[in-house]
Structure formats: C-alpha cells, structure tokens
Image (cartoon, rainbow, N blue to C red; front, side):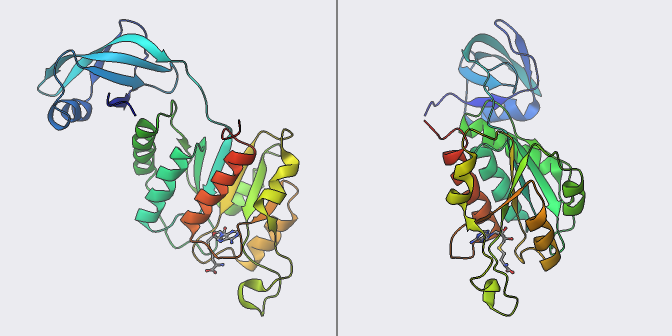
Length: 257
Ligand code: SAH
C-alpha cells in the first residue's frame, strides 16, 4: 500500500491545476501527517481519475496543492445498490463503511415495519463513505440516498433492476425461524442463473427484528425480487449485508476474473 496520502476533493483535476485545501485537509496533512511543502499527495474527485499532487503551501486556515499528473484513469464500481434498514448508530456506520469497501454504488436506508431507528443522518453517512473511499483506493464515492419507507422504494421500483431479498425465514409460523419449509434458495444457487444476463442489482437487508410477515409475503411475490438464504445461521443485519455483497461481487460483480 502506498504511503502517499489520498484525499477526496470537489475541484476539477487536470495537469497543473491548483487546488485549495480545506481547513480539515490542511490540518490533517500538516499537523497529523507532518507533511512539508513539496510532499506528494494523491487526489481524486469521482470524475477525473486520480492525480498526484504536491503541497504548495499551508496557510492559517487551509493551504493549496498543485496537481502534477494523472496516476489512474476514472473507473466506476458495478451497479449495485444496498438497501438496508437503519440500525443503531455504530452498526449503521459499519454497514456504510464496509459497503463502500465492498463496492456498493448506492447506499439507501429504508424504513421497514420493525426498524427501530427513526432518524438517519445522511450527511454523516456521506462523510463515512468519503473516508472509506479514500482508504480503499476507490475512485468514486457511493451515493447515499435519502431514506424512504420500504413501501415507497418498492412502489417506485425500476423494473430492470433485480432486488435480492435476504430472507432467513421459512413459512411455518409456529416453528422457530419459520421452520424448514418455504426457505429461499442459497444465494449462490439463486444468483448463478443470472450470470451475464442482468447488470442492475440491489440487495435488501432487514432490521434486527427481521421483516414483518406482510413485508415478507409482498417481497416474495414481486416479479423483480430474488429471495436468497445466507445459510443456516441467523446473521446480524450488518453481517448479512456484507456476506450478501461479497457473494454478489464474486458471482456477478468485479471480483470475477
Ligand atoms: N428474523 C430475525 C433476524 C433478523 S436478522 C429476528 O426476528 O430477529 C436481520 C436481517 O439480516 C434479516 O432481515 C435478513 O435480511 C438478514 N439475514 C440474517 N440472516 C440471514 C440468513 N441466514 N439468510 C438470509 N438473510 C439473513
């Protein structure tokens, strides 16, 4: 891993461009990393690839960099949305950080019947995405969507995007976890037939209390939904999100050769 710091900036990037450093970035480079004038820094903005830049100056509240040359061309992550029911703050933060590492293109909090959290700070989630993207060598930042209810998300669903519904339950209401009947197919088996056929995807993960029976039966009947099992153990919501994304990346995403 390169020791050259990597920063996300808003400005357009080109050879010779001068970039103003925010107060926060300047403090980080100057006081935390003890960078000096002329030291290299890598910058990206989600549009123009990655550039090597040099520290031009530090001032009282900021400073500037000069862009030298492009080190990487812009690429995009696969078209994978993650819809998840907001959890307690730290767990939500974890989902967002790891979804960025795992290459989600959109992260969308959805309120379901059993969601406990009632607010989501999208500005905070966006900041987490930026930090994770800086560390993970990603060239773009996942988009954090405005939270909405599951009903609304499903009502406005684009028919050409398949939705992977992570469903741990069976159909027997009297048995623990719904017993063995009516379980969704294992995720690998469920996704393999879509190899090379479908490019727009989303994954839906429920809250700690799971989906309500109504939500579950609605999801199961929608034509754009593929229900999947993530194995015989009940995972915490954040583990389920990461596990489903990892399998998706391996079968349909950019972890393939
Ligand atoms: N039904 C549970 C557990 C919910 S776990 C309860 O009532 O407490 C939180 C979410 O993670 C679920 O809604 C589901 O989307 C996902 N999940 C967890 N384990 C899973 C598994 N083995 N297979 C599929 N999805 C799973």
